[in-house]
Length: 232
Image (tube, rainbow, N blue to C red; front, side):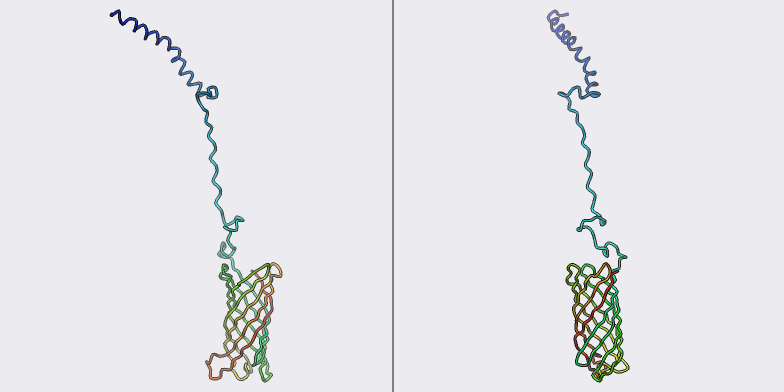
């Protein structure tokens, strides 16, 4: 062996002997860190995972948010908004007067725009210029649009047409027994209780046979009515 390499050999050997306790203790130290990390805070940080926040629930039609809650007639396709009604009307003009009772039912087929269709049947008595008092029966089909509502009040516009028969005398007196009808006007409803409303209106009533027959004497004049409606 070369005597010049002896000091280097002994130096490396001495270094390995001195470092042996450190390497021997290293696995034990790692096990302590894994099983007891709180004992080594300067070297290893213990990370605690925070819980994942829950996502907020999606809005539903059953909540109380007015932006997501739909009217009953929209959320429930089977909901029907019927308003049976009954009222008395009085119409007059140059050809005489008519007092009649009306029964019908308003159906709100467009709840967003508050539009209703209102079929009505009516019976009454007319008085012509000869003081005859013939009976009158008629059918009207009206349209209503609720243009304004506030604290139990509703204001609406209405228009429509119908057919009538008068006998045994005619009305107007020089006219025909069968005539057509045109009605247009405005009215109000007032909520009396949970289901019942007061209804009143004023409009213009026209009766004639539209020149279908040779004799076409018509009636034109104002019409007033007052009655009740019920909401279902």
